[in-house]
Image (cartoon, rainbow, N blue to C red; front, top):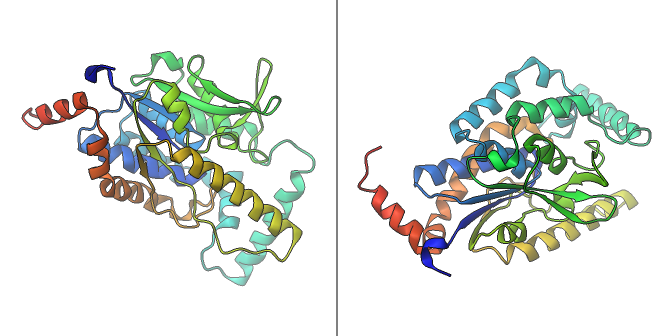
Length: 305
């Protein structure tokens, strides 16, 4: 392959609120004038990646996140109340009791409905961040990864509604209702590809920079059947994720700790965590870049702006 045809792809992984770290990674790449030719996102990675690919700057996406978290809609939402119940911060007895009752209430709802979160509320969130356009119209070529619950297959959106693709990619099982699309019943892309490295290769990337925002495995709790079940699922997901990450040229790991994917209590810190992790990986990123990108980077040093 000729050096001037080589493409750099960015694979943005899923992780709920931890996906805000992706904004910090994008900020650092822009500051260093490192161009990305293809973006592929899973779940939260599709939300942030889709917003960026559509033409929004990292600063604009960050401003939207901050405005959303201050909005009356978010503060009155089911998303906020569940997130508060799952927060690991220090709480009073009253708050702990309230959180326990909230958790039990939403757990019971899973037996009688396809999702805990109201579908209209979640669609509104997607529409807030993602413009109404076809994926083929994005400024940077973009793909979103979802999973078909009927066949178990990985679905990669490369055309059609950007909003629908991101909604399907973000449809966490049990939390968000699956999305009907023709013969498919679509849910979170993280079921089949938590960090879409292979999908980024398939989209034409010669160099893949992967960003994983999965939390660290917590200390094992194996005293109950439920705890054992959850632990087994976490181990399986982490093992599959690490297998796919082996095919990446650079892996960026923001330090998100054990933050739950719906815990918004530390949302403001996550963008900085992403920027820090990308800066730490900067040497590896630069050495992995194709010659064409290095020439552009060298030329940019002598250009104004």
